[in-house]
Length: 143
Image (tube, rainbow, N blue to C red; front, side, top):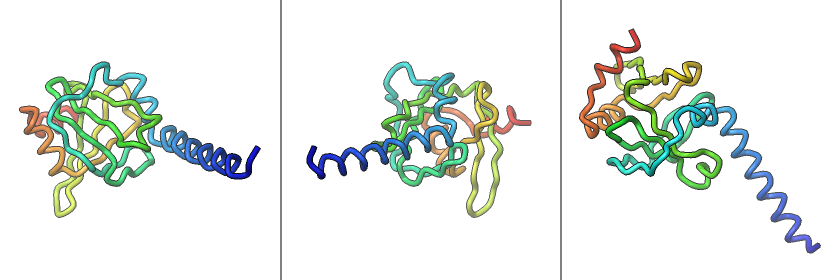
């Protein structure tokens, strides 16, 4: 077997190993077991977004969509190879908003309360407005 093929195999194996580790640390697999999107996400999209899911900070590789049923979330390739698209129903989400210059909102889904999704409050407000929803409703559910 040529050396270049061995090196290529090692590199690809390493990349897949890192992607699997990120998937496990973020809790994406747990989210997907309850909230995997069954159909394509077709609502207004917000591309190249940043956020934190579980222990993993995703920088400019998330796509949020404003679906009528809920918050759509997927990860751009190559990071999204092991992470299926999610659809988090609005009724299952609660949020804790931190106001101020770097306003952040921490979301939790009912079926996976131990996994936090943190994103910019301005971004979440834009997504919710596109879906005809109010951020106040999320805050009320977290009280």
